[in-house]
Image 1: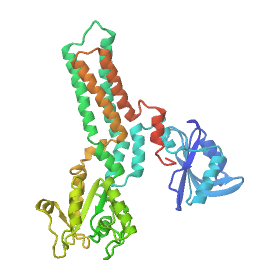
Image 2 (image 1 turned 135 degrees about the horizontal axis):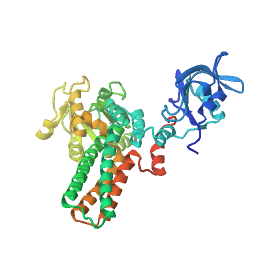
Image 3 (image 1 turned 180 degrees about the vertical axis):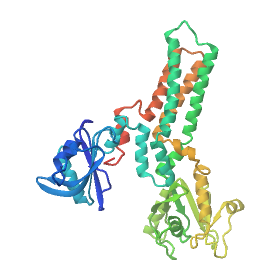
Length: 457
């Protein structure tokens, strides 16, 4: 596979729909379009002769036969996403119709694009940096408005701008140190040394600020897993339905209806929360229920948060007491359901004071539950400025390496170590920061990032 090839792929989701888009990019994109596109009328022009950023009506043709009636957009380099010549063909949706158009384009000289290859070319051609490329994937996969806003901020270059600032500071400090290495007879004056240390300490402070956003950034991207647990017939399935806003789980007065885990995602105060309705926790009555309880316990072990639901109209059981103690070490919310009925449940004072009273029948208490989830996940509301710089796991790892190296350089300057050692640490720090925006990369790193993209992006 060559970066010089002209590539093509379906850029819209597969399936039945009114329209589908086939994207073609590369030096021969217009020549490929000339071979397979035919516009009606004597005044019609070929795509290669068309003005940039124009739309043309016609047909995709193969072996003299019309494949589909389409609209074809011509976009010439460098004013395109990839900074290459680009053709986008809007054809009729549907698996067969779309595949027929794509096959015709491939037969005309394009090759099928690899996952993320269009975005990779945008990066390689300087259209976007690596954090912006990752933001494209985040934008596509965003499941809440907060996640969407964070991706848009990153795509606009807010994170890149700050990363480049700290890298520039490190590079300027490195240049200053290397200048003194070139002139060994001139020691760094104490006040100059203090200034360099001060600049590096500011860089560490900035890195710490970014690292504090890692948890929130990962939550927005992947969501959190919240297991709904409790004895049979406590109202777990009803709670799931209330949180989702539609009937997802079967609700029945018969205890033990849920035999397997059910997972659905909901937007809770901007947080993607994967709620898991589990089988009721009790001594299983048969082999199927026993397997359901086993799966529930396995789910609990992987959950980020537990919603422990109690039937407030029934007395506490020994099993309830055991699970209260067993899950005390995990993030959890205690919920007292059926508060519309006479209360018979008695918890100890601390648990009772912290429990949220809900009615899964009427929806009472759900807003308080959402507030509690938000507070437990990230200690309050996300500030608008935090969305601009929410880093991912790759950024976090690079920043941790950069921070450690910067701290070593600070220690070296304070201890009057050999400047060559200080410079080496600064190069490591600047290189690690540069990895974030793609100023220092390897082919393996790029392959790892772009292989996670969908085809056509």
